Length: 374
Ligand code: SF4
Ligand code: SF4
Image (cartoon, rainbow, N blue to C red):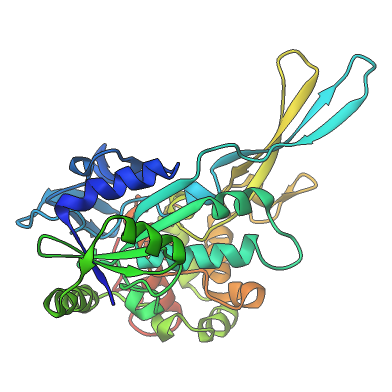
C-alpha cells in the first residue's frame, strides 16, 4: 500500500536523511537549468518551473502549476555521483630510500541521498551497474559510491520535448532501483517503497496511507507523461537496431550527420550511460609521488582512438558512427542491452540539435532523410 507524504512533511524527510548521516542532494535551479545540489530545505526545490526542450534547446519557464517536480530533466543524471568526472584511483609514494609504494584511494565522502532521480536515470544506473559492477572486473570506486547511495526517485508527470522513454521501455514510471519513489499529486506525494531502508525512513515520518483518490491521481500523472511523448526510437530500441546499423556502415547519412556534428562531446558528457574515460598520472609538487586519476573522455575526441600514435577514428564521420553503432548496436553484444534509455539529453544539449532518433530512423529507412531537424 503506498503512503502519502504531504508537502509540509518534505522538510521532515530532509531532516531524517540528514540525521541518518546522508548528504542530501535535490534538484534546484542554477544558471538557467535544473541541477542536483545540496538540499537543506524544501523551498530550494524548483517550485513552479517547467523545462522547454527541443533539439539543441533548453529553457526554463514559470508554469501555471506551483509544483516542485513538474519538469522533465536537467543535464545531469545519477552518473556523475557514481562514475565521477574525475576520480583518483591510486597514488604512489616514494620513501627516503627511493622505494615506491602504491596505495589505493577509495572515496571517503559521506553517503548520498539523492532526491529527484527519474525513471530513465534509474534505467541508466542499472546499465552502468552492468558495465562497472558485473562481469570479471568490478570497479571498486563505482561500487563504493553505489553502496553509499540512497535513491528517492520522482515519477514524471510531464515529459520534455525530447523524451522518448516510452519507446525504450524505461519510463516514465520507475519500476526498480529506488528506495522510495514519489509521484507528485495535489498537496504532496504518493510514495512507493522500494527497499527496507525506504520503508523504515517513511515509517519514521509517520506518513498516512495514500487514499484511493491520491493513488489514482498518481497513476493519471504517469499516464499523462507517457501520452505527451511524440519522439520514439525505431524498433522500440531493440536488438534489431544492431543489425540495421551494422548492415549500413556505408550509408550516406553518416556523412550528412558528420557535416553538422562539431565533435564537441556534449552528447557523451550528458549521456547517463556513457563510460569512456582515460587515465592520467599527476605528479605531486615535491616530486615524491603521483596520483593516478581516471577522467571522463568521449568517443568524439581525437585522442580517444589514438593507438601507438595513430588516431584510428580520424574524422567526425567515423566518430559519430562509433557513438551510434556502439550505443544502439554493439552495446547489445557487450551488455545484452541497448545503451540508450530515452532521456533525450544528448538531443537537448547538442549545440547543433542532432537527434539520434532521427539519425537512427534515417538509417533504418523509416522516413526521408531530408526531414531532419537542425
Ligand atoms: S543516447 Fe541520448 S537519449 Fe539515449 S540515454 Fe544517452 S543521452 Fe539519453
Ligand atoms: S552529436 Fe552534437 S553533442 Fe555530440 S559531438 Fe556532435 S555536435 Fe557535439
